[in-house]
Image (cartoon, rainbow, N blue to C red; front, top):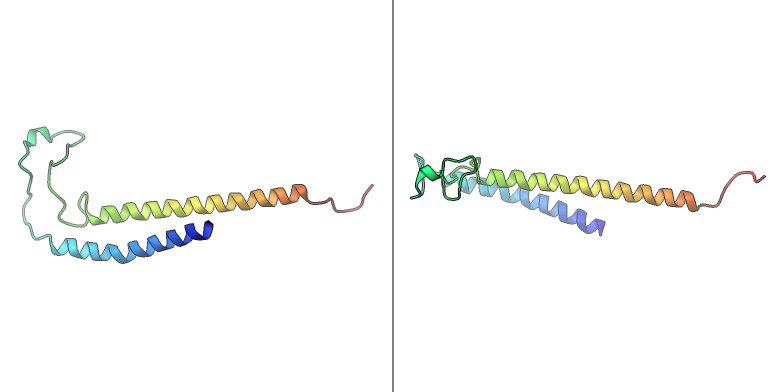
Amino acid sequence: MIRRLAAFVIGASLLMVLVTPMLVASTTASAQTTGPTTTQKDLTTCINSNPKPDCGVPPTLSGDRGGSAQYATFAVMVAGLSIIGFVVVRSTRRAARARDAQLHAPPTGPEN
């Protein structure tokens, strides 16, 4: 189970490392627009602390909101948290096994 999880995390990390540059390259190559483009929505309804969908400028560069760099950052954060969780679970299980082995071991030393 642990080896499968480790293999999955490593495989997902490698996939992300290989796919992200391709996404960034394709996004920057297609970003030829020069001005902000908005949808046909009334922009007075878009002025809000929580903007509604289809308000504002669609992502054109990889660093824009909703761009590939934002998704790559999210994937890196999820992978990092998964690795941290894996290490915590593994060390907790090891400590529990060592504690159980120590409690159930036959006593050693001189008997009184």
